[in-house]
Image (cartoon, rainbow, N blue to C red; front, top):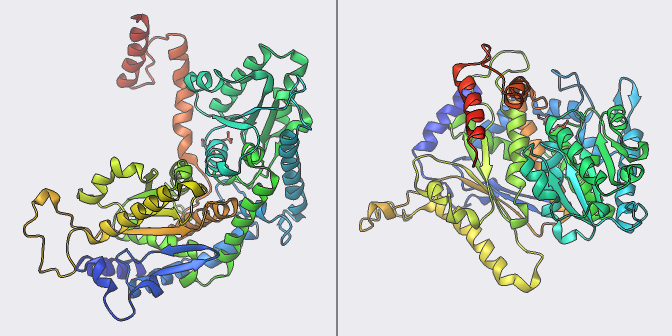
Length: 533
Ligand code: F6P
């Protein structure tokens, strides 16, 4: 019923220009922007009007977002396909209210795990934990993939102004080119390898870890290689069996999903780079967003509103892609991070009651930093006939005081893009319709965007941003009725790759279980290899 009402609102919205919604004595900002703890969210440049906003809020209530939210925070097993709780929020607040799993409180365990990895980060930084040649570690390689890579990589880059520890490097791909490039200029004698894998079974990570161990062994005596290794996992026994020393295994709870794990020991490489104090600030920012999400009424609740904007664009208006464009070069990996967060969480059609979702599932996330994108794909954003809602992020200040003019231009460009997307070349007086303008120079505008502004990209602000998007994805998932916390869709291809591997490795004959196309591609691989250079 509410969905049908929303579809009607969409029809009404199509008859109006976004700019027309600003007419009237009050303007629009009072109802379509909010500010919380130094974050300003402007969603006025969308086709959402007040009746639509109220309907969307009504939808969130009808889908029991508040109830599911409390179940998540309380440690209920809301990830029902894996029979798990969802407790990344506990990582930011282990000293908060007691959470019980199977009758046992787990706060103490989470706190102890946190203290352990943060103390180790400090030990690496201050030289208490030394390399086997008694020198300080100069470089860290985080070996992990998916959530065990994207989170720490994104945070390390975003907070590089705070980095005063060893340099961090990230090795994720099974492609040997990355292992080669990553190690070619590093000195194994002063490098610490972190094997980050929740399951400690992931093909890419285990293969790369073995390769890096070999690389270390080439120059480090066998009995000292352990000084250069540590592991982050949920599977302690597997880490020990693989050869990591007991005191170098850092664990985190089963109820922290990979793409939600940057707050846990998975963040170790970032913590080594920026230090415990800054890492704690990241956690504080996340905690602040958690409190807001739990307590603010929906009409001023940032994650809820961000989610409702997304639902409006994707599920109601049928705009199924979403561009995330940070005007902040150090947020280079943020779109990729959000891509996993949103697409691995909500790219599904099976609902909690096992019926099929009839609406579009979560959106396609893509993007990159401004201003770079302006000189590449923005042409499509402004003039193609496919409308992509854009989400801009921008800091009012940069860290480089001496480069203030650069930053002024950066902000001006961000604001200009949002304005241009909305207004186009159509003047406010629609009778003046660019008559003299050649068609190819005409911009219809009326393209939606939101802008999220903060003062400066500090660890605290980054923590707020990550938690904001996590909760947004959660709200979208609840509204769609899907389980945002499993990822069964990644399994099929993984298994098939294992089946195909022997044919590539050992040049096997045709396999009649494979399609003709696959057998031919395998044959071509061998033919091309045999051809020489
Ligand atoms: O294959 C998908 C996935 O399970 C992600 O959800 C996860 O972040 C990634 O692989 C890495 O998993 P792990 O940390 O267990 O190596």
